[in-house]
Image (cartoon, rainbow over all chains, first blue to last red):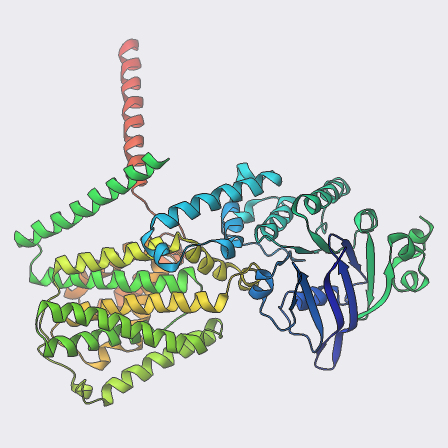
Length: 262
Length: 333
């Protein structure tokens, strides 16, 4: 096992407020790690720092892929994505007025190999690549059982399927590291259980490393191998789900007694 | 699949050829007289302007008020070149130099201003167009506020049609490519597009450059048709006029822009006879249309030639229904 992501002393201040302070996170290749904490603890800010939406005040983020180290801090989001980091959003950010198919095709953009000229004139390379793109998109949508809804507008999908489409779209960018921001938010227990299986399955199938922000403890405790707990922008605990369940500081900060008894 | 595609392409070609020939015949027959030819030219130029602005504003979501600026660059470049080289070669050189020059300015202006969003970008592009206009007023080569006269006329229906179809096809092709989809993604959600690996600045600038390039062509055609240029033709109102066509046709609909360009020009031609009331009626019409179709005539939908198919199909099924009813009635009698 090798380290795929190394976050060191990551800090982000907004004016006087330090949203994330001195966070260290290390991820092994193929791990599924949970990031939990009370509301406003800075979890999404960590994601935004990882994906380049925010520029860190201090600290480094290093992605190791195929023996190469890349510093992600300060890169623009699209560059981070090109390096193999994909994400979903807490408040779904699909391309609402576009079809399911287009949502996925757009995410495959960085792997499409024809130039502007071919785009203007629809040269043979356009037709060849677009056909490949179509096949790959349908294949991906099939995994999420969305292939028969490919011409539906994203905004017309039921909520659960929108969440699925967001994951499909993130996978379309062909990532090595997937960041899921509250994938089970707003889902009922049955849907959450299904999602849990799906996340496990895509990790195997796409050979992914996953970080997951989630409030639904049934999901987190079931599938995460390790958990980091954030509070007030600092990591207050890390360890296996069992260790976290019995950690005193975590219980104080967030979890409550019923989980520690469980 | 491929057969359907080819069939569509053939049908498109036939449709275009027919349009061209019919209008050409009408011009020969003098049904489209010199006066109506002005309208025709204005329609074609407005279609190029509107479709290219729609690429920037409707598809990429960047609110630009500077289209007249790009148009004026194309117009002046073409005029200056054809005045010194009054041949068909000079005309082509003028059109392409004008388009490239406009695209270049689009690139220089777009790079810094496209970081701005929404209304800020609108103000920046508006300022850009005004700066260009004032430069033309003060340059010697453009003959200042008096403008350029006796520009040789090369623009005719054939060239208008070729350039119009060419630019519209290039833009629709672009929109169907991965690059075009990247532009549309920026309009839908810039942060999401960025996070999905789309270089948003690059594609905004590309859309801006293509838009400016086409506006340059439109300007060049304009200069080579109307003999006369002065900077005040390309003022703020001109940009707004183009924007009105785009909004009226529907942001994000190429066919909407085409439809609106035709409709508005025809309306304003008919209104020529009510000289004082003309702008009042025109504005009133706009208000009414926007009240009843706030998403524009077409919304973000497109009319394709398939419409004729469907119309044909409806006609057929309607006929057979009528026939049936007729038969059943007969039977009862």
